[in-house]
Amino acid sequence: MPPAEEHLSGPGPAAAPAEAERGFGRFRLYWWLSFAVIVADQVTKIIVRVTLPLFGSVPIIPGLVDFTHVRNAGVAFGFLNDLNLPFKAGITTGLAALALAGIAVYARHVRHDEWLARIGLSLILGGAVGNLTDRLRVGYVIDFVDVYWRGWHFWAFNLADASITIGAVLIFFDLLVVTRHASHPV
Image (cartoon, rainbow, N blue to C red):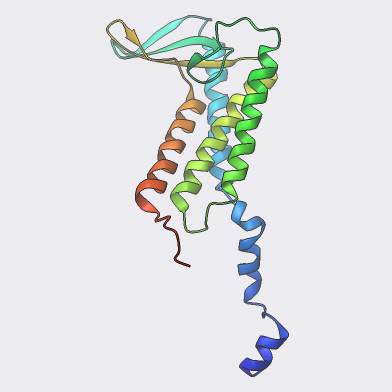
């Protein structure tokens, strides 16, 4: 078919992948990575729950890291953990669901070539679903990694929290260093 006729008749079969990429394909994340985070997070929490009594502790790196079984009924970094609200489990679950919705909205705007941001989003999604699973199942999240130095303790966290943090760092790195997001002149 001559080029003029091809232009008039619409895009050929080669254009189909490009069309798919503009639609749902843009939302594509690395689903296998999210799934792996969810599974690893849930398995580690089961191991902690079965082998370590609540508030029990086992040194991993003496003077620096312990595994300590604690429950976080609050949100990130134990915020709202000690607050006694009537519908706290519902509020924290709702906040986690809103975070997942935010991830979905942001994921739709990540370009195909922004693979570092896609990895970051996949890690965040896996971590968020891992913690949301706990909130829906038992009303709290099991945290167990206790990092400390002398008398100072960082907030206890779990694999899902670590995944969320690493994912956020990757996204910020992509936004600030890797990808150029300059305005196009009009």
